[in-house]
Each structure stands twice: as C-alpha cells, then as structure tokens.
Length: 617
Image (cartoon, rainbow, N blue to C red; front, side, top):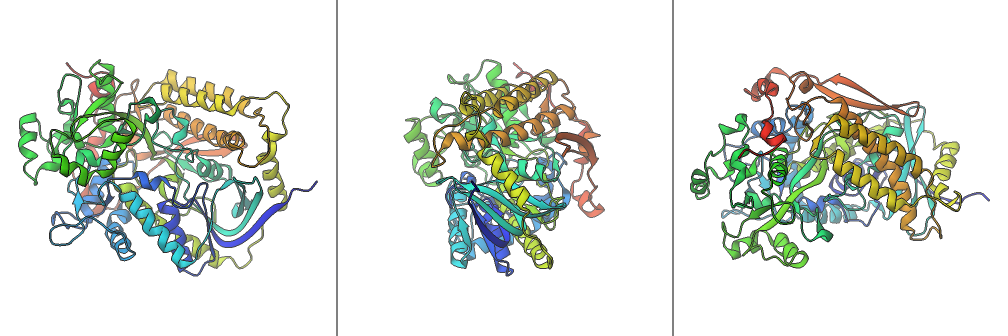
C-alpha cells in the first residue's frame, strides 16, 4: 500500500520555534517570502524561556561607559578567542537595536528610575548590560515574538518532527517528518530552510534541557553535507538544582548571582576566591572583605568572583565537590538570603522563589539553595557564514544554539537571547533572499521522500523481539555524563566512542509496538539516532582537541595551547563516516584586534590545575 503523505510548499521553512526560529520567520515573511514555522512541540514551548536572566546588549542605560566595543571584547574573551570574530562584532553592534525593536513590539522590561530599560550584572560582562524582566526574560521574549508572528499571519505547524532534509545535488529542496499526534507523514517543499532546533542536551543525564533537545537539526545538517565546528565545546551551567532527584539539573538563573548571591561550600567559605585565574585578577576582588564592601558599591559589584564566566565557575564547583567540601546532595550552596532582604528577592527573582518553594520546599529568602553544574548549552554546532547565517549547503541557514561560531569556547550568560534576535533576523533575511533568487527551483525528489518514509517507519517493522529505546537512552546519558562531562581524558572519550558504537547497533534494532498515534517510544527511537550522531561528533572532537579551553577541559592536557586557539575542529560526514579536520580561524582586522588588548597573548596560559583536578586547601 502506498503511504499517504501530507504535502506543503513554501518559499522558506523555519524548523524550530524558539527565539531564533520565530525571529527568522518574522523577517523572512517581512521580506515577502511565503513562510512556514514548524515546531516539534507547541508554539511558545521553547528553551528560550529558560534564559531567565536577561538579554545582553550595550544599551548604556546603567553604565554610560559601556559600548559595543566592550561587549565585543567581553564576548571574545569569554569565548577564549575561538569565536567567529565577525559574528561577535555583528552581535555586539546590533543587539541594542534588536532589544529596542522587541520593546516596540510590546515587551515589558524592568525600568530604571528615569524610565529606561534596566540592566543587570552577569558573569563575564564588564558592565551591567542585561535587559531583563525579573527572572522571566526569555518567557517575555517568546510571548512578544509569538504575538508578533501571529499578528503577521505566519503559518505555524505544531507538534511536527522533521527527520530529514531533502536535496537536489547539494542544495536543499525541502524536508520530511511526521505529525506527532497522529503519526501522519509530512513533506515540505521549500526554496530555503532555516534550522533553529537548538542543541542536544538530552544526551546527558544531568541537564537543564527538556525532551525536545535531541540534536535533530545538527544531525540533519550533517547528513545533508553541512559542516559542523567545535562540537567538543559544551557548556555546563554552574548552577542547576541538585535536590530532589526529580528536578536535578533544572536551571537556577545566573541572575541570582547577578543580584548578589554568593557560592559557599560546606565549610561556609566563599570558595570562588580560590579559583580566580590570573588574567581575571586585575578586574576581580581578591578578598571576602573587599567583596563585602564592594557589594555596597554599585560601581564594583560586577567584579565579584562569583560572576566569573560559566566554565570557570562550573569547574570550581566540580573541584569543591570532589574535594569533599560539597553540599549534602552533591553540589554547593548558593546563598542570597543573607545578602538581600526577602522583598527584594521575591521582586527580582520571582521564578526562582516559586521554583524552589514548589519543587524543593526551600524558601530562598531564608535558606541557601543547593546547586551544581548541569549540561545547559552547546557552543559548537552547524558552521554558518556570519552576515547571512548560511551554512555550507546552498539554501540551508541556521541560527541560535544549533549554529556555531558566535560564542567560541564558552558562552557568556545573556548573550544567547541577543544572539537569537541578531542572527535569527539575519537568517530570515538570508533565507528570503536565497528563495527569491531561485527561478528554476525543483520540487523534492520522490525517491528521497520514500527513503525518509522508510526510515521513519522502520521501528514498527522490525522483528518482534527488539531493543528498548528507553533503556538505550539511559545508557547513552550515563556514558556521556561519566565520560564526556566537565573534565575529560583520552581513556574516557575512547570509552564513549566504543559505547556509542554498541548503542548505535542496538538502536537500529529498536522495535516499537502499537499504533502511530501519540506513541512516545516511537518518537524516542528516532530521537535516539540523532543523539547518537551528535554524541559521536562531540566525543571525536573532544578527543582531537588536545588542550583545555572554555567548555572543553582535558585533565591529560591541562594547558591552553596557543596553536589550538586559532583552529576550529571541523566535522563532516563522508561516505557515512564522520571525518574531522583542523581548520584555521581567520584573524580579525587590526581595529578589532586592538580592542582585544592583552588577551591574545594570554591564550598560551596554563589553566590552574587546582580548577581541573582538586581545590587547594
């Protein structure tokens, strides 16, 4: 029997409806392209809402000394100079306009006394520059973008999983997938496609990511011939919930520390003073007494070591726990109760107050929170061209977490939301321009559509006795958590690759029963293949980069190597096999290089061993 396929045609199809996807769809539609927005979950149910602290942009509402040049320098410095400098430049220059645009569309920001958008401190930022709405900024962004997209009449297709990109030669012609509710297969013809599908945090056991984050876009792009870069660069947010077990990994916003919260070990010591890298010391308080005084001095509040970049803080917490100075449930304490009064905490951090009260029965106005590192974000991903967000496959664009280059080796908090706005818009522009140029576009190849159909339905057609996708997913999460976590070694990464090889063979034997309607085992069986592909790329890249830099720490190679600072690790699929190469990063022009000051020579520094192995006494 011939399988019935639901068919649609558009100029531009945007896959993913977080901040980057919606902003891309809005822009493509504004350029006159007939645009569809396709999302795996419900419209508005996106990881953008987890970005609670704010949108980084040099608005200069709190600090007149701030500028796009300082923001650029902070971003490059935080990314350990592995960033695509052009992306960092465009991001810093355009972020203020994108925030003001969001305000024009109805976003309600917290305000200064004179009515300007208020900005808060965040880790790695020289000045307070995060525009925010309490600790619900991402939610407000999604609300605003969602309303604007609906107002523009953009077609939205919800609960639709896309599994394969279709190509004609080397250019995209569409994509295929299925409706999650009914199991009905669907094919979209498109002149251009924008990937905005996020990362693949569900490959780790402890993660802030929800079920949608399975690396679909990365895996599809790789299969279509796109380049990936720096897949080894994974960010463990330093503060996720650690108790109770049912909520382990749920994000605790950096805004808690931005508003004065401090990290404390089981001895009651503010341990971050023991972990200040030498190149931060010139900008950072060195004693607890100084920090206490500086907390009452607005001009210096940003310099607390609790607001070092996320990779530094996550490694420090990891070291404290390993040294036996952790909290009862395997984390450390985050204390804001002794720093701020209860009304201030409830006003500035309403989501955190309710999150801990309802999920952990902890009143953060009176008690410290238990927190620990949680896999949160992927700096690596699909390689894109800065100005247009174009991938190496004609007609394919990418923006947001699925796209690499902007954040280098480590993302600064708050840069994700401005990244979504800046490059979501640019991806929409690029996709619309490409679609307009396609005078002789060909519809999707039916042989490719048929192949995709067989792949999607394969788990139903295997022998009666098959593998359990839930068991295999659990095994993948455990091996990634244990061997591809904050600290890595050659032996551990080799073990990951061996485990992935075995899991892939078993995943191809998964058998699901029942019908297609609301069948979560079927969904996971397909998601598992994407996660395995992304996990393999991450482990291979981590094995290849023989240094420690940002979100990638090798205890067998603790030095930050100057030579590696000028190279991306590039991953491609060739004849069904992942092939890795090292490719040079173009140097920034002289005017931008001068903005970096003394940072470039510091790339040859050695990461403090106390951060990598154990805390000093």
